[in-house]
Amino acid sequence: MQPRLADRIRQRSESVRTRMLDIAAGLDDVIALGRGDPDLSTPGHIVEAGRRALADGATHYTHPMGLPALREAIGRHLAEVDGLDYAVDEIVVTTGAQEAVFAAMLACINPGDEVIVPAPGYTSYDQAIELAGGVPVAVPTYERDDFALTAAAVEAKVGSRTRMLCLLNPSNPTGAVTPPGEVEALAALAAKHDLVVISDEIYSRLVYEGAKVLPLASLPGMKERTITINGFSKAYAMTGWRVGYFAAPPGLVKALTEVHHGLTICAPAVSQHAALAALCGSQACVEEMRRIYDERRLVMCRALDAMGLSYGRPQGAFYVYANVSSTGLAASEFCVRLLEEARVMIFPGSLFGDHTDDFLRISLLQPVTRIKEAVERMAETVAAASGR
Ligand SMILES: Cc1ncc(COP(=O)(O)O)c(C=O)c1O
Image 1 (cartoon, rainbow, N blue to C red):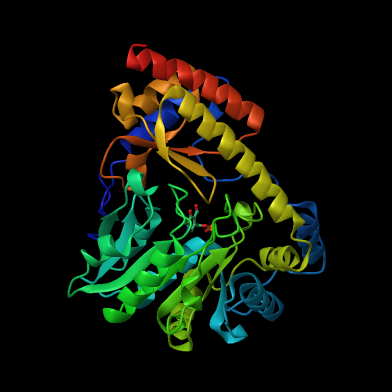
Image 2: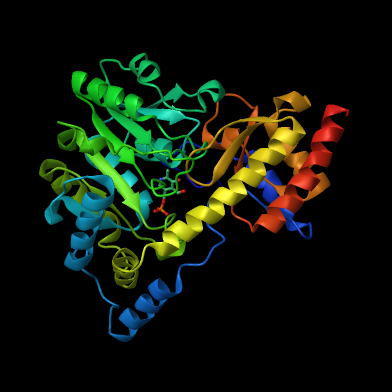
């Protein structure tokens, strides 16, 4: 019997991912460059704070908005690092940034409302929009712009039903940092068309080559219409702790907090204590991890150059979005061959809402020795596919 599903559930074709996971299950020594989960461990002092918190009884619900001490620390951090001015009661701790995305959509989107999302992008946004009854409207970004979102491309998609704009800065899957001038132009556009903006800055501390993320809510008049989303998963390698946050003006905070309470009540207490230690302790661990990702990024970019594959130069996050069309294969087919022939697991851009099948997202989440081995194996597949 086929269980009956709600109309809002659209069965996505995840066939490439499923096919690849099935193939990988039968192979040894696969180098996984597919997932977005850091291979580096949560720094020891953060783990220790979690351990202590458990021993001290942090095993209950907290206030739905989060521990006051953590919200204060987040407020200080946003002020010092991002130049953002949020009061403690404008900050809510969530069960990962992911939950903040869903709470934002459920609180702000009516059936039929349009929400602008960059493509390729982080497809959980599309899912959240659709669950809220909204319609994701994809704005393409291009390799020639290093996949930066441009205000001109967004404006072309704004219509009478547009309610919200989502900015992922830096971007998953491309690592693009939106240039500050474009962030300013996007802010002006949002004000002109009265849009709420989500500014997802979860990778903002992982930037390279002197790139600067301009926090949208720091621009004049923008705090009132912005939901700033951030978290601990990426900067502190804390994906499994499930702790993130949003900051928003009072009118939005109330509504989003109601949804957040309905979804998860509060973020895990133990993880909130660990997150507090992350913010209050030395930030040298973030810089150390950033430096490691940067080294891997340069190794990967040089290897792609040597293979004759182009890519958008990533200035943030820990991904490289590479173009394999010169091999003559569609990216989804290339990924399957790469797995079968070279035992390297990389997912095609089609899993990130890309309208072409030319790109793949390479995660830099293996030690540099494994990345070097992966690119050696990959070079053979590229050569074979290209008939070189
Ligand atoms: C752009 C973006 N936002 C949000 C998330 C979710 O992060 P969290 O682990 O904090 O829920 C991710 C995870 O990959 C992401 O890439």
